[in-house]
Image (cartoon, rainbow, N blue to C red; front, side):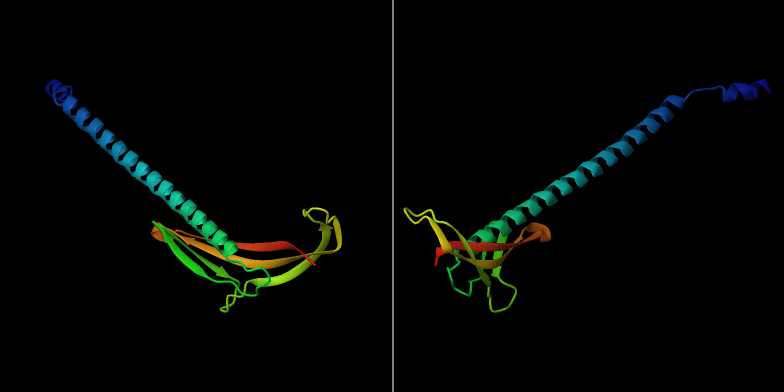
Length: 154
């Protein structure tokens, strides 16, 4: 019986077992940290591409505003690429690119010298413009804007 007890009390080799156990723990934690940092990088790139797509859609809105013709019932559509991002501007909801909504008339003051208060009012032309931006990995943003052009004296 005493010989059996001495055999179990022998601690030779326990250091290598503990070293292997600690190395396995370090390997598992290292794999976890690498996967977590990879996921964080993907999230950061996704938000960067989404933000770039938003700014491309905003550029499309500004191009659409620049192409408005006061009093004109139709607007032109355009599409342009800017590096990895591109935008397209569409005016109105129909296929005829009709972005003119309506006119509104409001009384008020004019900035012009000596004109004063105009009780007849000023006319504002109202337009609807949609800008779409796309980026890498299918990042897309769309902005709908309603634009009032005026005042135009009556």
